[in-house]
Length: 301
Image (cartoon, rainbow, N blue to C red; front, side):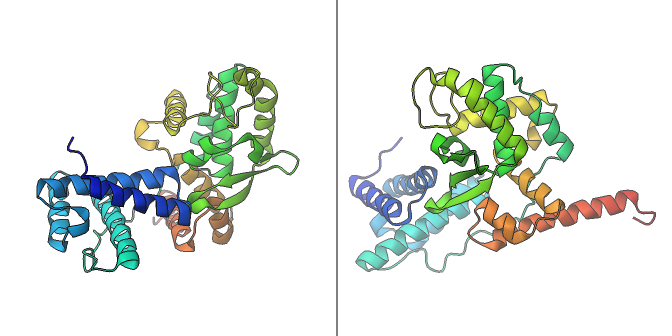
């Protein structure tokens, strides 16, 4: 792979450091910005240019190349967002022109979040064997994700100190460095208490790890491991892989709350959405469900 030019790498590193220091963005978000900028920088190097001298035509050409390679609109929209932030930050600090001006983002299809039925969720939750150490851990993992609507990244970063069993809440460090308090519910709390009493001490092996959910080696999980466990138990529950994604339990949490009468503002707070418009997509899920029920059961459906 062609290396990034030193001057471009210095500019990218400085930009990433500013985002971390000023906005406290998550490691995964910063890694995505870095990857987008480095990819563009490598392409520019092939055309005898660099990030600091790139023009609007070069961005159009790069986007066109990615489309030709089959990159999806969402991927190109994220890339363009990364470039906008980089060049706007540079203009604010150093002056000059922004080559992303007048470039419109690709239109994205507004798809509905995937959610499992409540019956599927029940089948998934009972799949791990709670009489084994790892099975009890996995049951606790699934219960917490569904009961609290956590992102996978939030789950694996959850420290033991974030749990308040007396009040039945957890403190979650979410996107943008913002914390939120989420009630666990009685069932999830019961499983968590059992995990802390029976399984975590075994996995910790006498140590005092910071992470709440531990691997068999007594370390915190990665996102990839958590996703693997969810997928494995979903397959055991007979749920097709096409219906499973890292976000599926979070979407199910939101959809089921809305179906049972939760209001959007409450849902927004629990999910940690910065804008209510992000949460409103779940009302579309509820409407689609009602339409399907009407079509299936009404005499004139």
